[in-house]
Image 1: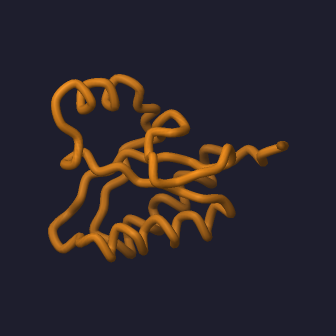
Image 2 (image 1 turned 45 degrees about the vertical axis):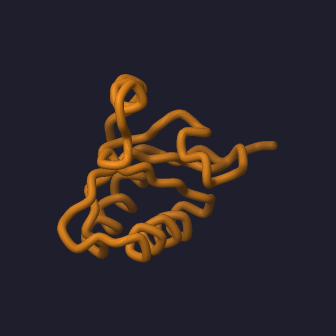
Length: 97
């Protein structure tokens, strides 16, 4: 499958749009498969910090909104949901924006 490349400047612009709409701070990209609830080779996985006021519905809305802007499925993993070795590994594998 030919997955379109998302240019870094476009990606940063869309991330800034989502951060302005939702109480979330996106830290960077994770390797595909990190957000296990999102399927597809074209999907993008992000690591993020939640801000005050973010709930599960808001997180889902942020995923859908960013996915709509990027034209592909998006998964967001929250730093607060990572424990132990997983937290260390995800931080090591992060590609900051």
